[in-house]
Amino acid sequence: MLQEKIEKICQEYYQKCSKEGLKVNLGRLRALATISAKKAKENYLKINAPKTCSEEVYISCWVREALDRNFVLKTLIKVDFKNPPPDPYYQALTDYFSLFPTEFIRPINKEINNTEPSKRLQKWESYSLATKEIEKRFAKLIAQRKKYLLKGKQPLIEIFLRKFKIPRADYERFIENKEEIINFCNQILPNVGELPDWFYSELNLPCFVCKIQNFPLRSLDEVINFVSDKYLLVKKFRAKIKVIMADNTYMIYDKKSDCFLIKINENVNFRHRAIGLIHELGHVINFLKDFQKGIDPLERGKYIEEKEAFKFELQVLGELSEDLLKAIFADVLLTFRREIFEIDLYDNPHQDIGKLYAHTFNRCFPEANQKRNPFYILDESIVTNPFSSLHHAIAYAEVIWNLMQDVPAKRDLAKLKLSS
Image 1 (cartoon, rainbow, N blue to C red):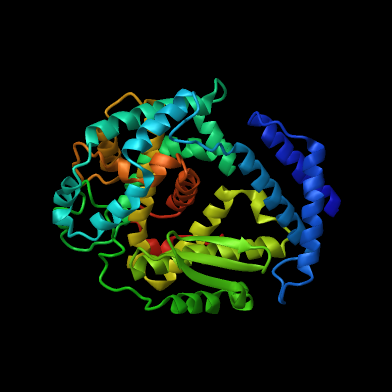
Image 2: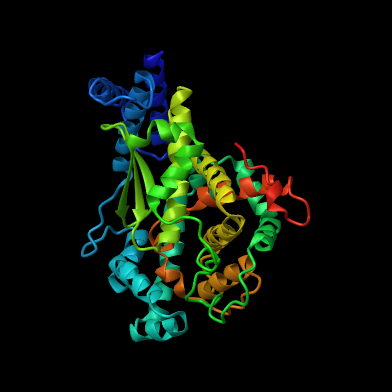
């Protein structure tokens, strides 16, 4: 049975490499899988009880991760910005980042976010950046990236649907119903009183989580206590859940220690750290559920995992506070905004991108009236990692669309059916 699984994984990655035009030898993939399986079996004997999964699932996870790393390494191309390859895409990449390097983005964002909202535009102008030239080079970069990714093959979006294992039907449902879903999310947002003039301005990301009066948690330990009291899997494996501060929030399963490492963004306030931890605990629970069923979570793909984690997040937030549950829908809208922007951007890179960025914001937040917003250049994911939130957006949309079928017109959240 295990050998059949390993062979299936090898065949999967052989097909994956072939579709990307990568030269790969099936025999070498099998050899890499065999070596990885041996290492996994040896390490499995060393890990502490309670073990999160069976030996068979553990080995298949280890093999899949090894082949996935091999695939990623084959797709990476090291670019010397002083002497880039002749391809127009790499030329455009070099032109853009020589003018506005990625290492500028995070410090500028941090400084602006730490500035009083009414003074952020003044702060931005103090950098005296060549904004018009940056925008011009960004448009050229997007146009060349689109050509490079397409290579005369399938529609661009198919690349990312396949990458995240998003069913095309789910994506099309989002495209068809996004205005209705956005309207639903806006009706859900909590009443936090009169909003300041800057709330929907170009240099502010509207946050209702920070606006609600009461927050039901005081520490990250309290978050884990609350979840472990309600979910036996978390209580059973609590010693194998490690929380550490980092630059971003995400969860990884560390195969060597058989532990879940939850990294929490240290650059956000406690409220957002707590919500991030809840979401990542959702991923932990889904991994553990898959393990108990003999399923390799990596096989299911990021989209399914994200959808289940979002269901869990909504369930926990609803148990903690209805206002908190309502507030999170603003974050959902911001995710929709980014992906709608990227879809329209790559559909037509030759447009006024600042106007497009403002327009997509206004679509997601109807009370806004932005005319032009050039600050997409401060979104690191948009610049360097296109469609990196697509699986989040479609997962959110699917969960919300299903909720909408259960919720009466008055939007009574107490009647939401959130169970998996």
